[in-house]
Length: 261
Ligand SMILES: [Zn+2]
Image: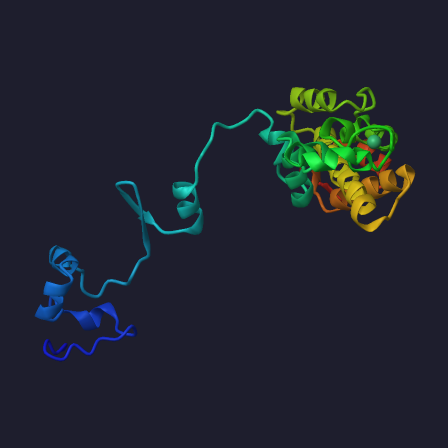
């Protein structure tokens, strides 16, 4: 029993040491000091019932889970029509993250930084794209209008069934968007390729800017294809002749799901 005159509570006390025989054992003096304790009188606990962690979501009391908490505290905007181009099952998360930034025009390219820092405008080198030295470091240029990036794009697009699409960003996004609801293997691969291209071109730009390291466009294109290929090796596809031929073009022979349709 809790002694009302010598409370002796510590942080290690459990509820059952405070709530005894259907009443809360707070010392009277505490009730004067902390009136909130009086409100607890109306709360009656069921004996011999295991503890459960709950989350109050508005007026609803629900089982606690981190996803439940996240969904109730986050600000939820309207779903955008490009969401599936960025986040899809079996995407490569770090590529998807960068793809998201590019679609939202959030990368810190020099044209953006110069908008804040006028003193830098005198230094033309700061504005220059380090992949081609012929234009400014900006979203629309890097993906993939830049001469360097265009060479990369032309080398990788065939493997994703995007041969007909030029290096202009809007054209690529329109092409992917028109096929956004397709679950076909080739559309999955085309999304992987575009996201990987965005990721590696940005990496190359940063390697030149911060580490003075350069990779030729052919080598970067090979790196993109190799990365997508490794991803594809880990994915189970439903078997059909079209998918088999597609994977053979990637030199992948053994990850078809025989049970698939
Ligand atoms: Zn360039």
